[in-house]
Length: 319
Image 1 (spheres, rainbow, N blue to C red):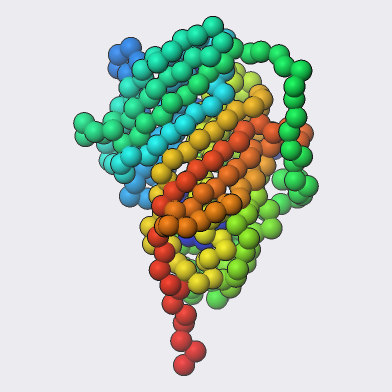
Image 2: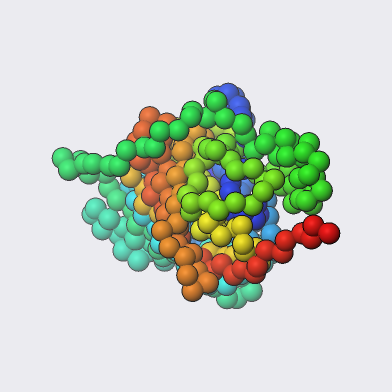
């Protein structure tokens, strides 16, 4: 195999033509490039840490890289199931220990434990499958949305927000912090809501997303690792959207994360990320996600539950 804090309202927020072939994606060359220490033991370092904790998508992506290095080239990852058990420390590397749980003729399972300071911070099981034909096939239909070429990227949207005097006064620190982040993925939101007013929204959002830079055809497992990284961006925040007009998030972290990979795709090509939250309660939120190729093929399905603790919004005095 080849070797973000999101805005508080939970909405995800780059454009380029087909990337030049000498511009390798930073996600492949740096973020997901693990250092081998011994057989089935790897060290990962950290890039684009958006908060005091590690970005969950980075841990999921690096763990899948470690698991994929322990299987043969002719199998492909079809699912992974993860638990975040402790907050990660962004100041030290993570050790990834891979256990070869089972290697079968059709399916193989790998268990990965991410360790810092001698304690596990994350555990994951990934399942790999030999390609098998099947006459039984179906999928949902992809939502009808404007193509990415017709939409504004996050950098342009933030620039517009910063030009608005009211928003400059209300969100100066947050907007400038987001604008300064060198996020290794590009995002174009579908129907972004105005920041000028808090409003009640459905627990749903969609955006076009792709990795920055060029990855190429290469090993399909690497595209899955990049998708694992991408999948955690602004995902859990979908559960906050119906409540942002009356509650302010003061603590939000992932508890678990699952993914199912259905068909080949390119993570450096635009994909539609469709996110929805069917339930929230008990200081937790559940979110489901689907990554669609531009040709309407369902590529990846995701699910995540996380802790969400809120406090009441404080209205500004009119006096």
